[in-house]
Length: 206
Ligand code: SF4
Ligand code: SF4
Image 1 (cartoon, rainbow, N blue to C red):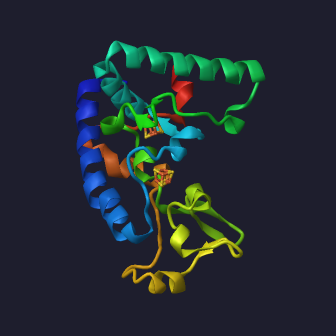
Image 2: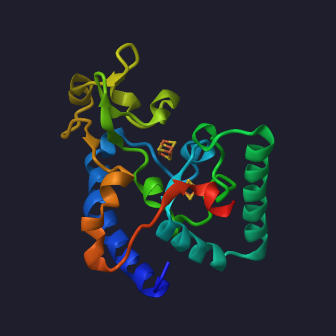
């Protein structure tokens, strides 16, 4: 990646704008349905975490600031994940793992975490509507967490009626916060950076 310093500056500006104007706003609107809090880490315990090159480089800036014990633990976590994937011969699309940056149920690179880490927890539209399914509810609805107060287990949907019962002003709604949308070149090129390739987090270390 050329001109890395300038690219990271552009990315930081982009991140600030997206965080304030889109992500924070969306979480605020959906606050009656959101249970996210420090120490809740189910969503970092099993996943693939697709991230782009610029996001990984930004994460690694934070990694460089960590103390040696944390660095060692993270590198050890990464190596274990890579070994397990290789030893079990699991393809990338089928391989799920705990994020190596999760230490004691906390994100060790929180300030520099990737976009997918920031948007997770909201309902989101699926890119290609599959049958009648047009949006996805975070998996933690099944753990009694996000959107569980308006979730109907039989139909596996959220209901506006339940939202009225709990007195929420805005109904539960899905947002278009996919990486595909948020990393569009038209959005980023005037800020002077590119997201680059996107792949599962651990594959950046293989
Ligand atoms: S998305 Fe769900 S699992 Fe993740 S922090 Fe929020 S409530 Fe917890
Ligand atoms: S980088 Fe942090 S927030 Fe993102 S998956 Fe890993 S531990 Fe979770």
